[in-house]
Image (tube, rainbow, N blue to C red; front, side, top):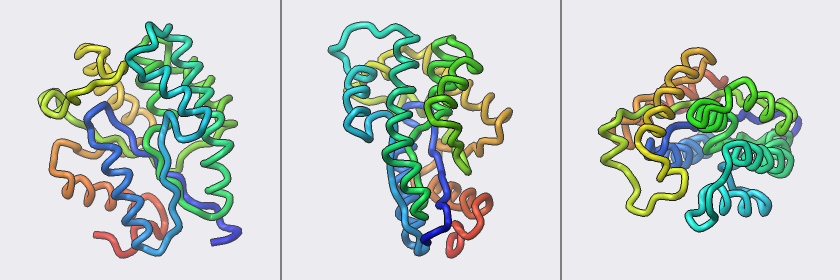
Length: 212
């Protein structure tokens, strides 16, 4: 695929939506279709990002100011796009990323009430304007989220039900405004995988060949 830019797919969703599982399964299916794929995630996929992740998600770091949280996420994203995502795309590989800018718009912009426009401007600057080709949002209802809640929640997962309900609602609203593809994440992992694969095949030329 030398000389051909890869496709950039972001898998999003609230905590317990199953996005990490589906990002992994999507990467496997893309490889099965003969494509070169780089799997990555935010925050924490670089050395700098791992330090950011420890602060943002760690339970032993003390309180983190909302603006500091947004800036830390932007720092992680700047390093991530420079070190991982752009080089992979430029080499012709597809990139499947577990969280990206949409997470900041939802978590910091809406749920932390910093403003979507302000957080988007910060993220655009951090990424030098790198946009995904497709954003998939795994949407789950409140009961499913409660049933899947982690037994060892991180700092963000401990933010409370009101916060996480706001996150889920924000994903739905922003998806409608921005053309993100919403996938029902309440179903079995196999059913969600099929829906994700179908969405990729529809939106990305050639990516869905062999899918169904």
